[in-house]
Image (cartoon, rainbow, N blue to C red; front, side, top):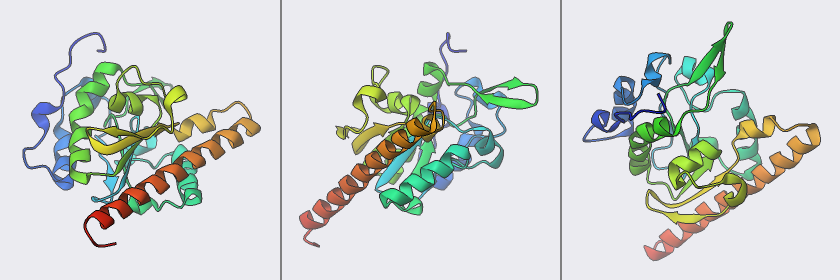
Length: 223
């Protein structure tokens, strides 16, 4: 599938998009073949006027079954890091670059499989539509797939994480690691160090979002 052209999601994007309308419409998407095996499309959720919008890679096994993003094992670590950084989860919006779960079966288990570049590009219209509705102050990409969906294939999280830059889809965007990468660290010391770096990235995001909010209030005369 990755070697041929995919139709992409454009034909399934509603003209008058709200988050509830998009969430319903994504279930009918046939922009790539991932829908054929997945239980359902998993759309984003959260505050519709969130200043911080997080993007992960794709739904996992648990998300695919429940129809909700960011509910798997790595997300428990994500929620703890948000709390330590002073970010309220229900004040953010969370979604994925790809809306269907891509996997391979090993016995009774469904093992995550990285989405291809064409699959990520095929799904991008859904992501763009979400961002256009939410209009966040900052997009935070979690991991390489999310970052490359926003910044392009040449982007490297290992070299550019934490750099906050202007972006055409939102006022600003940045990247950090995906929480699952922290869980895959080789030992407890490495996991601890990676987790602390992750929290530090989130603290910078929080401080930046707050500064954008303050400057907006000042410019409108409401500070």
